[in-house]
Structures are given as C-alpha cells and as structure tokens.
Length: 221
Image 1 (tube, helix red, strand yellow):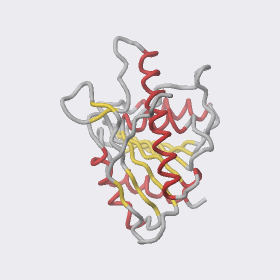
Image 2 (cartoon, one colour):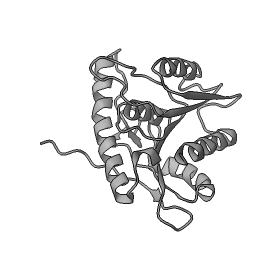
Image 3 (cartoon, helix red, strand yellow):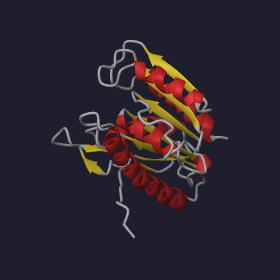
Image 4 (tube, helix red, strand yellow):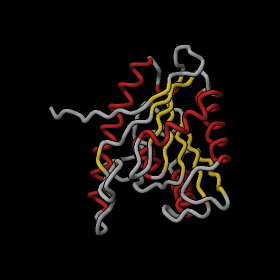
C-alpha cells in the first residue's frame, strides 16, 4: 500500500479559547506557502471565534520558481491529462490531510470550508467537488475551474461556492470567474460571484469582508 504524503502548515486555534466548532483550511497560490494565507486567517479569526484555521504548505516544490510550493504540475505543452493526473494525486493527499484534521478536532464535514487563492482555488474546487460527505463551502479568490465533470472522475459533491476575482488580474484572467460560475451552475452547484473592480491578482479589503461573511453563513448551518 502506497504511503500518502503528509502535509502540514501554520494554524490558529479558535480566538474564543474554546473547542473548535468549525474548521477553515486555507490553500495558497503557486510559489507561495501556508504562511501566506494564514495572515488572512489572522484578520478573520477575531470575528469567527469558534473557528480553527490551518494553512498547509502544498506538497511539491514549485517547478517554475526557485522557492515556494505548488499543489500540482501546470499543463505543459497542452498536456491536459498529465495535469489532471497531478491534481488527482494532490486531491488524495489533501483529502487525507482534511480527514486527519477533522478527526483531530472532532468536527464533521458540514463544518469544514476551504479557502483558496489562485492555484489553491483550483485544487479546492477539484477536491471538494469530489469529496463525500459534502463540506460546507468553498471561497475561491483569483482562481479558475480547470477540470470539470469528466467520465472517469465525476463531480459527486455540491457545496456552496463563492468566487471573488479582480477585474485587472493579469495572472488568472477575470473571465475565468464567469466561466467557472457557468460550469458550476450547470452542474447544480450554488455559486455566488463577486467582481472586484480595479484589483489585480490579489485579495482586497472588500474581498476579505465578503469571504468572511460567506464563511460565517455556511459554517453556522
């Protein structure tokens, strides 16, 4: 039996000081690591007192920079199948990590949410839409849906999704948000999308506020 690669990263216990009632897992972008998005969690934590946060480092060294991590290999020379294989492998690693964290905190799937940025959004969507039982929700910043419902790897789960994207993003085009919303909605998934005028490949204050409000809503159900 192949041993599943372990991932880890910085975490925050609930700001209330009590037992965690929900868990938010933060998935960073290409070339970063968990220390990037845990700073977003520090902003949210005071207003989400019962929520624990963790921001794992992606399992692989980034293949286009000299530092940082990546969740999966990018598509090289149009090799869509290779990228899908890489994403499937990472989803197995991430699912194992999520199971361990849920068990550690004695939290059920309906109290789990994923927050992704850029490539982190891509792997959050890929993983959560194929994970049962369904998690509470996904917040995706500046990302895209790059693998849809394919016969050998179908969508089986339909958590609520919030997509937030800057109109001036020059890394992942703004149009990716509309394309993702269309595909997800067609698959029966409830999607809300928010455009951030004048914002590039980043998260602004308005985007942070919208993400926090969405998480508070879906994690209280």
